[in-house]
Length: 338
Ligand SMILES: [Zn+2]
Ligand SMILES: [Zn+2]
Ligand SMILES: [Zn+2]
Image (cartoon, rainbow, N blue to C red; front, side, top):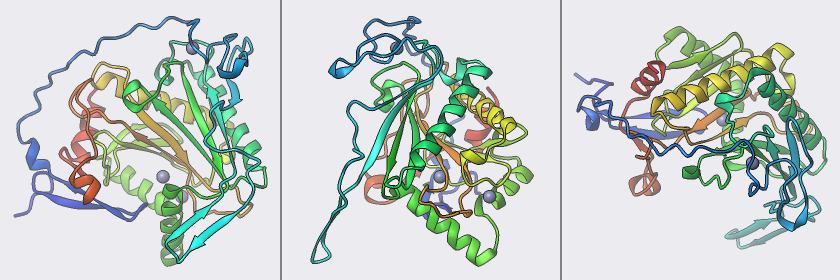
C-alpha cells in the first residue's frame, strides 16, 4: 500500500505547472527537536552606519529625511531605469533581447533600525500596507510600467545586507517570469472551469484544515500542497481580489495582522529572527482588468532544521526537479505547534 506521508512521490503546483519531488522516507528518524541558538545579534534602535536610518547619508551623498513612519525612495543602485528606450534584438530565434524600462524603489517599514514585521505594532504595519497600496497605484499608473513586484529579503542568509526593516519594489515593463507562469495557469483554469484557481484552492484548504498555519477573517496562511522550501507558506486572500488596491480598510488591517502572525510563528520555530524572501503576486498594471489574478503572498524561507541548517537548491534540483524531505503537512503541523 502506498503511504503519502512516507513513500516518495511528486506533487504538482497548479500555479506554475511544475512538479516537486517529496521524499518523506528520508526523515523517518523522529524529530529530535534540537535547537541551535544562533548568536542573537542585538541591534540598536538607531545605527549611525546604516544608510536606511533617518537622517543618515546614502550612497552618492543623498541624506535621508528625519522620517517618522515609512519612507520610500528610488533605489540608488536600481536594476531598472525609467527612461530606458524600447528596443528589441533577435537573431535566428536564438539570440533574443528586449530593453526593459522600469523603476526600483526601497520602502523603509519603520525609522527604528531594530524592528521586524514580527515585532512591529498593528498601526505601524497598517501604515506599511497603505504605503504599498499607494506605491502600487502610483507606479502602476505610469505607462511604461506593466507590473509592480513587491518583495522583502530578510536576513543575511537571504543576502539582505542591512537588518533595517525594509522591502523593495521593482516595477517593470515586462511581466516577470513567475507572474507570467501564474497568469497563464490562472487564465487557463478560468477558461476551462469558469472559476478562480486560488478561490478554489482556498476553499479546499479551509475544508481540509491540514496545511493551515494561520488565519484571520480575511486571510489564511498555508504550507501549500506543492511547497518546495521546507517551511514555505502561501498567504491567500479569502475573498477574490485581483490586487492590493481592492483591499478594504478592514482587509488592510487583516493583511498587516496575517503577516505579523506568520513571521512571528517563523521566529518561534527555531528561536531566531527567521530569514526569508517574501513578496506579493497580483494583477499587472497594463490597463487590462486581469480578474483572473487572486492577490496572494509567498514566503520562501531557506531554513531546514535549525537556525543555521539551511536548504540549498542544488544538484538534482538545478538539473532535474526541486525536492523536499518533510511533507508540507508535517511542516504545517510544526508551524502550528509553536
Ligand atoms: Zn537603520
Ligand atoms: Zn480568486
Ligand atoms: Zn504567486
